[in-house]
Image (tube, rainbow, N blue to C red):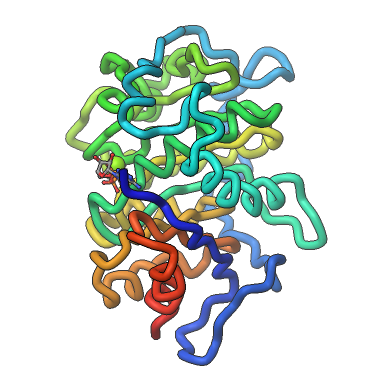
Length: 297
Ligand SMILES: Nc1ncnc2c1ncn2[C@@H]1O[C@H](COP(=O)(O)OP(=O)(O)O)[C@@H](O)[C@H]1O
Ligand SMILES: [Mg+2]
């Protein structure tokens, strides 16, 4: 199995400047995300009846054996190399959720994205969600936001069901109607939902913005991980990025062209915290190369 090597770096304050290499563990600045029209008026369809968070009314069983066989982190593989690598990846993300000297707005909304398809976004998002849900006392909501190429039903072994797209377009649905509790304790899943010709527009819509704000505000102690579309193939992923507190940017080692990385990083410039993961590096020596690759303006 290929490995995600330990290529984790905070890229906050990234500038198109070949001399600037940012590595400080705390964001230097924390610009507020732009206010959007209608932001103040929360949509109370997302509201849960109590303070315990959005109660999922439906249950789905993840095929954990299949996940394990495919090399993902599962309960039986917490000592694996991949589990150790994701401990490194999740640490700075969780520190930002807990707050610190420089609080990050909506820090619990974490987008996993990349420049292009096939770089390992879904692989990273699922492992990150499994890692956080299994090892920490935190509830994780994993959202399949790559609505054009959803992966969660196939990888997790779940039947296609209603999800994000349905709740965005059907005003009679509540978030809790489409959340799926799973057999992995503390892991809740929101599938992409019923395919729709307007899927990409829905993802960039005001309704999506309100949904995200409400989730971030009401369930600030929960981690919400978005398996997202690639930045260079779609415009809605950029809109989505502008609404996230943190972005995990996946780069496929020795595959993703440098100009693609540069353009994609430009598209997520406004997000206060970016963390890069170099995926499928062949050996540790490549990690150093990976850093330079990512910064190589
Ligand atoms: N580090 C890795 N080790 C093993 N397989 C991987 C790794 N990263 C990605 N893959 C596999 O490569 C394929 C593409 O990855 P995927 O996460 O689906 O990409 P994306 O979501 O960016 O389109 C999938 O079959 C995935 O399981
Ligand atoms: Mg994917």
